[in-house]
Image 1 (cartoon, one colour):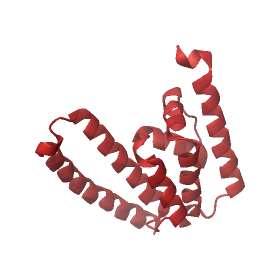
Image 2 (tube, one colour):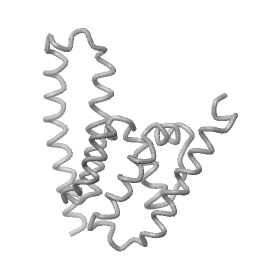
Image 3 (tube, one colour):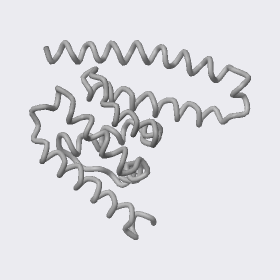
Length: 158
């Protein structure tokens, strides 16, 4: 069942990426967006799509709670962090690993509210029900605090 779920997620992500790419191309071709920076539009589009893929995977296709959805919309969470850093932070909390200075910077820009909502949303997923929630919450707090220290230390600004 595990492999089947991941196959379905892969197919979903691929098919939606094709649609997303087509929509992005049409947007870039539109006269309404001619005065906007093309690279900025592409980067924001990819960031938003990447976060949607992570949310889809971690939610096991379960609709998010109304509260988390409102948090994501209100705080524009989907546009604040690149996919490589999303995975790095995710792995440091739900698996093992550390977070680089670059990704710590992106995590701090994401903000504590978005960070906490994403961790909570993941914990609500059936895929993560067997995890010790207290341990995950503590790892989430530790990751946040370590990133605060790393991004505010004198050597990180050099």
